[in-house]
Length: 413
Image (cartoon, rainbow, N blue to C red; front, side, top):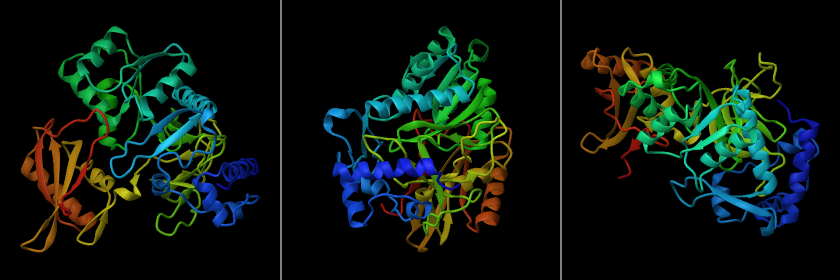
């Protein structure tokens, strides 16, 4: 998918705005001799940027407008190193709400719906984005935020919520609690808008079945507005990305080469009209592919396939590169195994070798010893690594109201 003439004009305008602002990227572009862009070839010569640059510019070095035009800031979760701070103008906030409302509409959500919002509020972009889109659409927002599951379920029943917005981890927790308490007949949910983390088919199927809802993947990241820059439609043929606000590329994570539609790689995003903190060719580290052709739903937005993981989620054991998604896929092949698991990696000093331990949940009806052997055999045959496998009962592993950490690497301890 080549960049269009209209998109090139918008990128050229963004570069000139950045240069005039004197911000962090103005110096980068001046040193690189970049003063504008007029062709796809010139565009592909613009250097990539990533989160490390944003941390180098902390706190507001990427701001491209005067302070009086900034109406809000948001920040990434900042689990490692400095957080990333993104300033927003009034137009940025409005544009984000417009895209989010589109997401709801594509999911078949209307002003008649009652939308229960469980993602967090505050510096994080989640809750407030879901709410702004809801209000733009004209639907009823129920701004619960995360946690307090008893209250969540009470409000869901009493207010007859029809849409739940959540991370997949918290949607799973709610589904399990509603199932345990025998409340399925008392809820009125029809749809779920799920974001923030990649999730397995096993988890998706469980949530959809136990809550009796249609599920929609919403996409976004703090650096690029937040959640709400794309969503899949009812035809479930990939996530529509709003190309009047963003341009997407897929690159080889190692070489930076731009890949053709249909080939998997790392998502790179350019903001076409963002004012407060415009980003050009931002490396998301999310792994997916652009789906060729147009969707059967008739919408013309380009589509991204399901996010399969992150290039920086990769871990190496015995010289083999692995991703959590590969373990998830294998677990999904084994009868009775739930969607929840964790991976521990350690180093055996006596034998001078790495150890990988997979802990997975399974239903009581299956033989735990045989299930562990099945998982071990599949991992060995597919990844050429022999893990230690521990099977525990369903509900043993911790549930999260936010994102669930899957990989624990103890080799640096």
